[in-house]
Image (cartoon, rainbow, N blue to C red):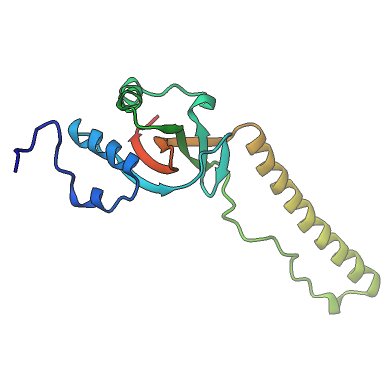
Length: 175
């Protein structure tokens, strides 16, 4: 039995459950450097930016905001290990500025039985028109907010996608 070298640290128990040998190598790099990488799961590498759930997933090549230097150093360290990766993605939490927290508008209750026939029809048409116009204005404001970029991106994270499709969280930071 030989002695363990400090260059070959013992992997923690949770690393042993990771199936990907590539992800295990990244977790070893993380441990040696006192970083906190985490395996997130498996998925194909996105070829372009996508919106899914509450997140924007952007390939690093398409990212418009600069990443912090300490994050870039981690990415370089990963590339220098020789672990084959498909690429890096930056994931942003998309916080909607205009959230629809209101109840759908309903026509007001009008005592139609107390009105004459013509007044009853006019009141009902007016109530429906007001409700539809209100919904149209809300929809227009919401779509305008998204078209003008009123979606805030917060808490970005850099993720390495290994050649076998394992997503490894490399770093998170605040803007």
